[in-house]
Amino acid sequence: MPTYAYSVRDTSGAVIPGTVEAESEGLLRRRLTEQGFTVVDIKETKGAKRRNPAAGFGRVRLNDMAMFCRQFSTMIDAGVSLVRCLSVLAEQTANTKLKRIIIDLQSEVEAGQMLSRALGKYPGVFNNLFIGLIRAGEIGGVLEESLQRLAGFLEKDQELRRKVKGAMMYPMIIMIVAFVIVTGLVTFVLPKFMTLFTDLGVKEFPGPTRLLMGLSHFMTSKWYFMIAIIIGFVVAIRLFGKTRVGRRILDRAKLKAPVFGKLNHRIALARFSRTLGTLLSSGVPILQALETVAGTVSNEIISDAVLEARARIREGDRIGDPLQRSKLFPPMVVQMISIGEESGSLDPMLAKVADFYEAEVDAALQGLTSAIEPLLIVFMGGAVGFIVIAMFLPLVAVVQSLTGGGAE
Image 1 (cartoon, rainbow, N blue to C red):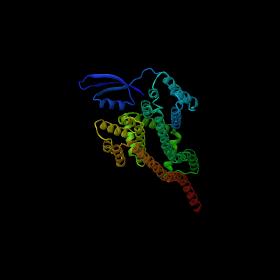
Image 2 (spheres, rainbow, N blue to C red):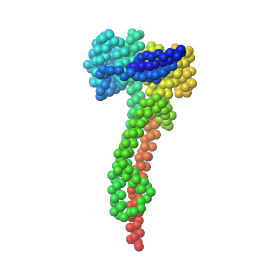
Image 3 (cartoon, rainbow, N blue to C red):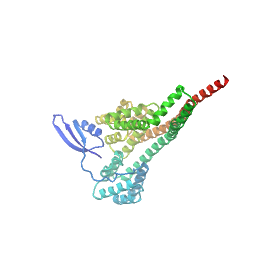
Image 4 (cartoon, helix red, strand yellow):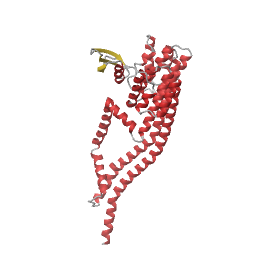
């Protein structure tokens, strides 16, 4: 978890400096504001850092994390000590990066550090949800149950991601094949035809052929310029997305985009419900749970709505009212959350909401794939057909001129 140096102004106007760990700058700023301070400045500290075992190549996949949690929970439930569990997990973990992290966690726990605090050293591997559930399990003495819930959550999240990736795989393959075919025709086949037509004495080319010739000339002689434009555009979007304003604009666009906007919204609602339900069922307080959800929902617009709901709950409101006012949560979600809150069964209600929206995402992906496939095939056929027609129009003109000349 990163450390921030901040300065705030209290109600008397005095400036108070401080240093604190927080999930993100935005969450720290909101937390300080809720405490009645006016934020003057917040900066992440850049102190000297020792080598991080999580640094380097490789990544820790969701299935590795789920397996880690399952095995960890089984050994804890069997009465194996925490240090011994970490030692066994380090030996049998196939992922090299995760193995280095577990070894470091073992040394931290042996030195007397709490497991949840040791996990906080690796925010790129263990997110706020993971750390929050482990902390709740440590405090409540039910670490094995927290690990089981984490494993179930990670497996559900992995299944959702796999469905999204699987649904997009075929359209992506079609697009790549279409791009390769069009590029090959324009850069290799078309120039040979143009040379042939020039040798045959063709001086005036039809409009489609001239358009294709211009595209071919640009792609063969200015290819580096085209690549630079694409790379520059991607880099600019990434840099823009790292700013607070940029993240908000891009996240709002994700929710409002045609076709994909509803899909992104449903995915975000499923993740919100599943994460909040998992935290509450593990005994995490509602305010802390909402703060963790805001940091893991992966959308600034929905995150702000969750934090606004958290602020209203601090003032005595019910959770459903601020969610309804945000207009980002459908009436069905709001009503089920309200019923769960009134009946004291909020976490099972949230689990039902998550199941519903995961099923909605699955159905939407199947429908989207069925709609995209024929559109891509038509697009591919149209592009190739246009190129073929543009290449053969001059040939038709040559044949007509030769036929006309022979008749005279």
